[in-house]
Picture 1 (cartoon, one colour):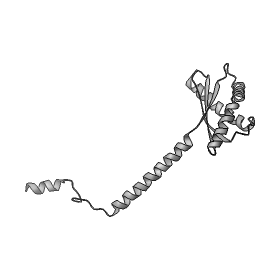
Picture 2 (cartoon, one colour):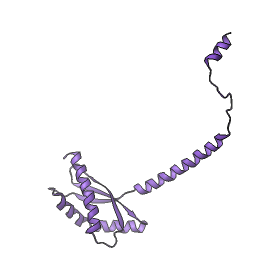
Picture 3 (cartoon, rainbow, N blue to C red):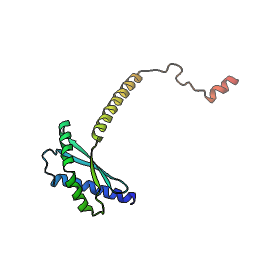
Picture 4 (cartoon, rainbow, N blue to C red):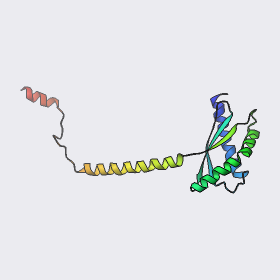
Length: 145
């Protein structure tokens, strides 16, 4: 199978899993979950579904347990919808993008603060030597005379 076909099926799996979690899975442990991505191996045998959960660590743990227990239902429904000869196995992974993005935002804020301090210190600064330390053509002609 081609890579384009695997990507197309992965996109379809992402939509199917999101719909199933919204409509069919009635597990009370399932929190406010968002399916962020799905990836399918080249042989179409294994699907990795990435998700995020709004809430604290307990909400993440209970959602992971709910997804693990509903994996069979999700796999069978995905198999029916895709109509493939072999239904891919489904594995769920917590997506770390929100935490990583938050960390990057903190680092960017530190960099902005440091840049502001440097700009404030440079505002009243004067060069240590000449204002223009480079040689110019006019200077060379004056020295030759």
